[in-house]
Image (cartoon, rainbow, N blue to C red; front, side, top):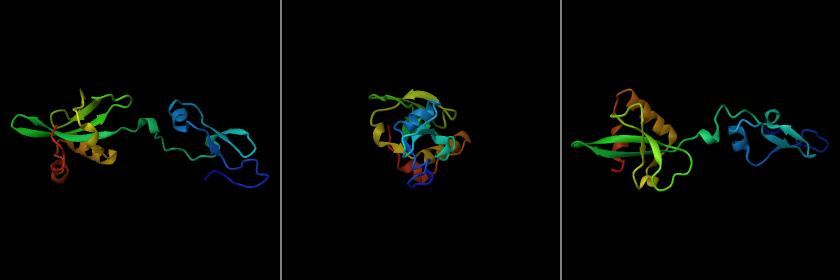
Length: 142
């Protein structure tokens, strides 16, 4: 993966310097140091990250909230950064299929769901279809 390793190899084994994800997300070319201390851009050593930046990954939570005489399922994409006690998130539900920016209720830390699951449920909500019963049944009520 990182090029040939061996004595006398000018390419050597590439060691990516600390902060790779930060440098990539900032648009700065990451640097590798070979066995001889020479620096080279990682693009010649490391395969591309398929356009995915660590900084872009979102965390998701899911819960139900009382609405009228029933409960509404919400999948919320937490805003990255300092979350504090009550962070902000984009809430997706049948009432707000395109998302609404709101504060997250207390206790949210235990309501995390996988991003892949969240995206499937958000797609269902935006298509006007209900979330699967098995998914909804396990959600906490905020």
